[in-house]
Length: 255
Image (cartoon, rainbow, N blue to C red; front, top):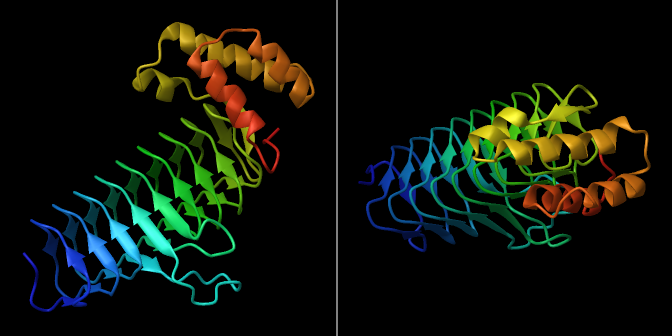
């Protein structure tokens, strides 16, 4: 059902069973997948592809040009997967040609009110952004990460899978997978045990993650030394993911 007051560009592609609320604007080069619900007063600009069964609440701005000064009007993209919930006032910008040229949102994410996703960011699956959590440009966020309210993430930072970032934290360096971080600037506190438990990791895997965390953060080792010692713990996926998130760091990890 499309409200008669909605403005939809003739070039936009609207899938089956899509609901679009009153006074919403859907621009050119926008594709909206089957079963989406787009609320009132939403703006979606292209080039943007929205997958299936996404819910977008009122006053969100999706696919707008980035305010980054290097952006010169190039036709960059926004790609959004399936089953995402985008709450009130969320802003998601397209990419820039100086990077990947597209912003990418995965599946099953929850973006609470007034969250912001900057240009060229990549957000994985099942992440939660609490109210006003914001990413600058070029940020990577792993699967199942949780960013609490008012978290600010500096550009080009990597947030590892299954991380928990506490409220009002400022993230200036990369956060390895499974780590809980608090503070401004953020500091590592512990492993996200409760999150790992909820997502089906075994008690032995959580214990491995805790041992790896202590080697990295409690032994006073250099990062390379810590990686070497952690790699000898096990070949379990929880260890390989932890090590990979450290090795893939481009800004250095929080310490």
